[in-house]
Structure formats: C-alpha cells, structure tokens
Image (cartoon, rainbow, N blue to C red; front, side, top):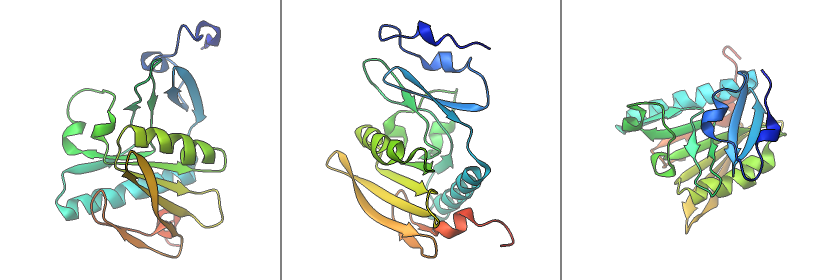
Length: 195
C-alpha cells in the first residue's frame, strides 16, 4: 500500500478514519491533525502492559469497582485540526466497553498509562502528560523501561495539571489509592515466569 502523505497539508489534516486503512504492524495517533507512526511494541513492552492490565483488573474486582483495564485504546483529543492518542493501558468504567467502537473522551478514562522506552521519553513525560491533564484524566502513570531498573512514575490531577505523587522503583512497592487501591511492584511487571 502506498500512503499519499502529500495529500495531507495544513488545510487537509489526517482523520482517524484514514488511519484504519493504513498498513498493519504499526500504531497510529493523530496530534493536531498530524499523523504519528510508531512501531509495534516490543515483547518486553507487551509483557509489562499485560501484567499491568491483570494487576489493575484484579484490584478493581477486589475493590468492587466496575472498571476495566484495557489497552491500547483511542482517546479523543479535541483541537482545531482533530486528533486522538492511544494510551498503552487505560482504566475505564465497565459501561464504556458496551456498544460500538468509538473514541473515548477524557471523562471516560480514570487512569492513562504509557509504557516508555528511550525513544519516547519526552513524548510520554512532557507532551502526553500535558494532553492527558488537559483532558481531565485524574491519574497518569509512566512506566519507564529505559533504565536498568524499571520504575513507575505516578501523577495525579490537581488544579488543571499533573503533580508528581511518587516514583516506585524495581525492588520496591507502593499501595496507590487511585483509581482504586492497588499495590504496584514495578519489578514484578517485567519479571518473566519462573525467574
């Protein structure tokens, strides 16, 4: 398939519908009408996402909260030229899983999580941090896999922006209250079975 990039200019931004026709094997997001193309996640990234979703789903069930952790999922980013982002993991109310495939809005997301490597640190720690805060998503976690020890950085919404609440490094753990009580141990997220 040939992608006609020259057809998309300032007066003709990309749309989400157009990304559905793009080649598989990549992930796509649109920021202010501009197409962002990312490689498919690495096996290590996928393992952490899978473990994190299981951890969050188990914690929601234990707390009796009707919420699910899924990902990646598309979240609308209102702007003059349109867009959406796809957090690696998102906790949403159970009711948001019913119905057709639609873009979620910020109010649908209780927690957004990005799992980042060295190639996306600025985008996840700065750009997406600002966008998710602007959407009103109450909690944002960044799982950093770019250093020897995996870590989880926790942000909470306060006065329209995120404030850094804590950072949990492999070998440690913490009980977080939002979006429901959950014990996070970063080292366990990346540990292979039997190791």
